[in-house]
Image 1: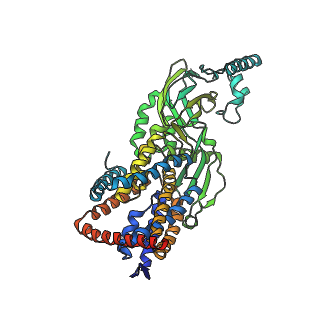
Image 2: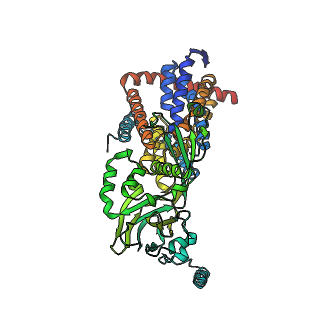
Image 3: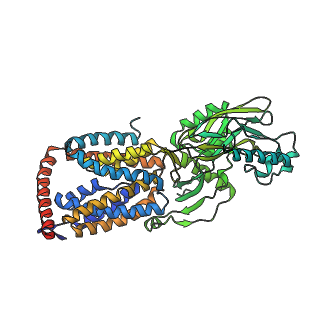
Length: 130
Length: 428
């Protein structure tokens, strides 16, 4: 499939994009996360799109998942209103604070720390640590 | 008896008028004539008459040293049961929560996998059976069985089956799950209600699915004297549901005390999350969410990845409630992000909508599956997801990716600039 972005033509592999998006959405909505970090490589490597096309478009695609996933969770009684009211303002506030800090930290450093943190957390969840 | 009730009412009224609220005296349930008509714990068919006609057995009495706790605390239960009988205490909160259990274990008798989902909204938010202290060894043995322990087998081993009575009567729905039903977003065919015996068995499985650990459902604390007097020191943990709790002392199937009541109070900033069935100081999840939201933006991944596992590790929150409540919190930031990108025409709608529609289909199916897995399976899969994510992040810090990314970022900035200029030019 051909798409156009700012005057440039790209050939994209929609089959991989849709199949991957479908599977990522099932897992993401089942476990309650957005799925951004998985959609980025899927669209960049799997569909062959450059980064500047991926950032905005992947966010739009993920939003579909977030909306329907939230509705379905609500339908199945998995939503706690009070808990939401505690976390929601914190998430919004975090979104405003983060860009202020982002200018002062190296993105590479953050990613390295995050990777170490994720490995530790992952191993705890798998029962390997603690 | 009428006079006693009247006096009691008068005392209550005087306290109410004085504005101090009812006192907190030790409540005593004695004498079958007072307690039997209202007892919940009594099995059907055993009337006051029946019990009073067997004086040799004698009724079971129960009393507690206080009737109010503040977000948990210690409680002393004492009373009297027929000499020589072991005494069990059944303690439960009146507030109820949801519990679900998916039976996908092969039935050894028929060799078939049932694929049946059991679901209830009436599980007590707290449930505990306190067994005689000398059974501590047996509880330790059950704990050694690990995650696969069975509540019904444990109760049988501990001789406390008769104590399991409140949840035995709750309404349990039974669904036949199927792949097709999951895809269409349905729980499956609702099967006919179960008989009393099966309901009890399933309620035990649901209690285990809800409270997970042996220690959450069973403790050994009742000391029984040879003359039949018993006492138990018991600690209610913090973070449990607020409101009324009931305790019933059980000697055997037909020998139960009247339920005795106490109240668990919580006060701001501790709040009770009704769907999660947990009381929580609201500042902790707020600060955790804030810290992770900031960190999430910095590392370029949503916070849900870290937040969800941390929430289930730190608090006894059900994983389906965590998944279902964290997900909508990011909807707003995503929407504002989309708006900002669309202002500078930085979204390819064709790609976004087509891939989005396939994600819509996936997102329709996923939440249904959350209730089919156990907390341990949730943790296991999440553990692997995090390891894959960590690998993705490490790949993004490798020199090859970084230099390529630098070029792409430069192009991105250039495009952004052009886009902003174009948007402004249009305005002007």
